[in-house]
Amino acid sequence: MIMAKFTEEQETQWKSTKTIGIIGLGDMGLLYARRFSEAGWKVVGCDREDIFSSTSEKFSNEKFQVLKNGHFVSRISDYIIYSVEAENIAKIVSLYGPSTKFGAIVGGQTSCKEPEIAAFESILPQDIEIISVHSLHGPKVSTTGQPLVLIQHRASNESFKFVECLVSCLNSKHVYLSAKQHDKITADTQAVTHAAFLSMGVAWKSNNQYPWETPKWIGGIENAKINISLRIYSNKWHVYAGLSITNPSAHDQVLQYSKSTTELFRLMIEGKKSELKDRLTKAKSFVFHHIQEDHDLLLDDDILQKYSLSKVPPGGRQPNSHLSLLAIVDSWFNLGIVPYDHIICSTPLFRIFLGVTEYLFCTPGLLDECIEVAVDDVSFREDDLEFTIAARNWASIIGFGNFQLYQQEFERTQRFFQPMFSEANAIGNEMIKTILERVKERES
Image (cartoon, rainbow, N blue to C red; front, side, top):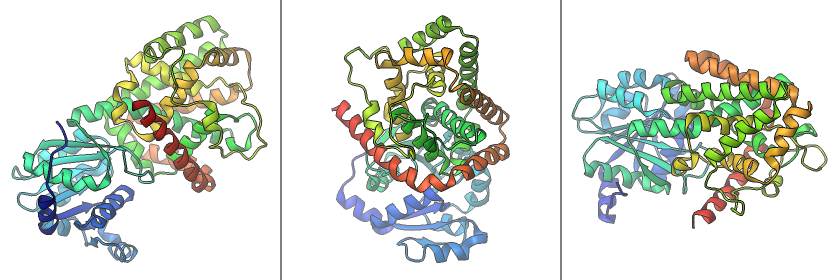
């Protein structure tokens, strides 16, 4: 499917006759409400009814209107977007779905689409059309050029054209998928990545260690790891819990990541250098088979050196086992995932992570250095132990589907890093901008 064509006359007519409803004014719901209303659409939204007064006051200067609850939004809106936590989608649709305007279009913004679509199908009347969306980035990232998934599940081409017209103001790159395709691809590109950086944060917290204050965490790769981990922990826990717990494909991948981490760490402490090298060489050949010796890598250590939170004097890069990065490439190999196949649906964080792993595995001599350090140097042994424990713990929480434990573990770590979020996000935005420019250069 290609982007549906609409005329200026159609856009003008839709803007004068259609009302857009947003149920859930969290970070992403608010982003959509602002962008749509600023583009000239009539937008109404709501958050929890028990905080209606404070929500109305908070957004009193916005161009969109805040209503009391989802019933008021649903009964007047022509396109309704449920921007709520994935774990709550069925409950919220059950509550407000019966008030949906006759012939309206309904969609959702959750990170896992099959449960969302199932909730719409089981609760909403047949006259309601279903077109879901998912912006593959966080609320702090510019929407321009970022992937935006559009799912025309149960809707006419004319309705789909209207929705495309609406979201065109985001200036995103439209990607057309089914709910099943979306969930498989988002698991492939996000589940293991999130597990890695969630585990990094827990490991640093467990060691009572701020990596930007520690001399051994110096270098471009370390900067990327620190910035991405802090960026994840600066967001809300449910963003990542929803993707990993409600998406069955993600369970297998997080479990494999835990298994890869444990098995690689065991080879390290047992001193099985040749076995470790053989295993990682096979993983490299599978994931990075298209990269030649003279290939222009997406990232390099010099580019990432300038995006540092470090509070210690600048110095040379310290060799590191990089267990977290080795394990993700090993996971991709064991899961049969070639990440480049899904680059069109990748988040900014995934592109950074892919660039960093590519650099680690494909820069001559660097992978061998990691293997040497992993087996012969105990400088990072304690960190690798805590990381392995953290990865296994996250796999258990996700495997049991326990949202409460997920929230507790996430928010404990979040509080530990809280003071650095503002600075980390500012630096992270610059890093993402640079990497996106490199991606465009590579694709052109």
